[in-house]
Length: 623
Image 1 (tube, one colour):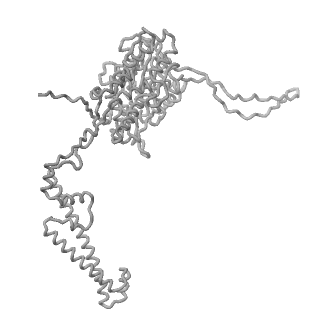
Image 2: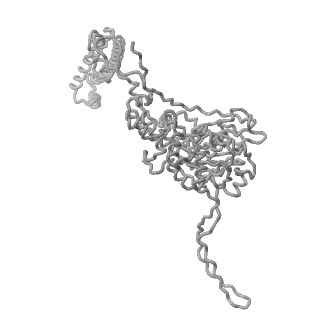
């Protein structure tokens, strides 16, 4: 006997996960005493994570974020503020895709109305019920080299609207770097270079002696959202018959579950030319479909029963129409007979007025219409009597008006004898159509082409450097000793770094980039998406909030130094005072003033010309 070969193809189904609304938690007692516990918010452009920085030993449920939801809001035009849906309140994003709004422009918060709705959602679901203020310190993430105006608006929102006591800002990639260095028992201050790739942007963040070197940071405007859009465009061009089914949510699922980064991109593409390799590695994604085929193969009994039902339906429709027509003809005949009685009674004036209303010219025309209606009424009554005695058997020729297309097909099928139908069904092989295979997406080279845009943005038409080219540019700005220290701790973090093979690809690129026999080390975050929140929680536990504490901005600091003020710490942006010239509007020239001295002489004083610019000290963050 021949051994049965196992099929090589891999068929997967889309999960199409639906979000479930978040519960409204009660405020834990350990988060109130002895001091209010900080609230840690990882304000990501793809997902928001929020939870408590609770002390150790308070239970495992507070060791991870209590809230994880998409950073989007949906509100239809003209709807009230209370009707806005936030995050997990939206079970399926696709029907509301055109209504979705985010607080981000790339990775920078610009829409503070949506940001306020996000804060309301977070504080409500975490159980903060204090009226008029939030009594807990806030630890928030912000973009690397965040613009001063954005930080000023965020501080104004937190201090003025929510009246929080303390705020601390930090960079998500640096929090993740801090958390993993603590887990690996590395002694501070830490030196290394962080490669962070999120939903909208990727960043190269050099850290020297525990501080971010903001002057040499670089941003690449290619990340997860561009990869998902590129994958959607590729598959829609490949399968134009399934445009509606190839949604952005499914493409994000494809990226997270089925894509990988090629160590050598061109060699990997050559492998896909082999039919055997293609059959083994292609992923067939099954789209949902209805298994019932219209007009498919049915048995003779089912067809006879279906035809009988259609005939009964046709008979009921025709009988109802004939009854309605008979009633209309009888009413018109009675009216005409009433007009004819006026002529017989000698009421000629009323008779002529009735003829005018009926649009008739003479009594002969009236009599002709009466004869025709009498014949039509009699024929209709005879047909109704025949139908009642025929016990449901109806001839096709009796149909006075055409039915819809389905009824016409049924009548055409009824003209064939039953033995012919059974003979056809028995002898003719009906063609089969595999609906499941028709609704499959063959995802082949797309699995590696989409993650590759992180290294080659030109694949999607972006005229900018790839991630490794930008890293080489950053390293070239340092001395050889500093380069050795930086590449000895290359750290990968962010949700867009979770592709299989990403670490090996970075190592291969660094090997080609660095001098011969130089050493480097690449490490990956233990939890690429959650380590930023965990690092912010660890930092908040090790640095309690107090006036003048490192990294914390108090309300007094906000009022004295402005909303753009930043208290630096090991995971924050750099805050550098700089002098800029602030233009001042010129005042109109004043006429000279004449003063009389005691000796009697007049002295004229001309006012000093107004200064066009005034040099003021302001604080800025370098970008």
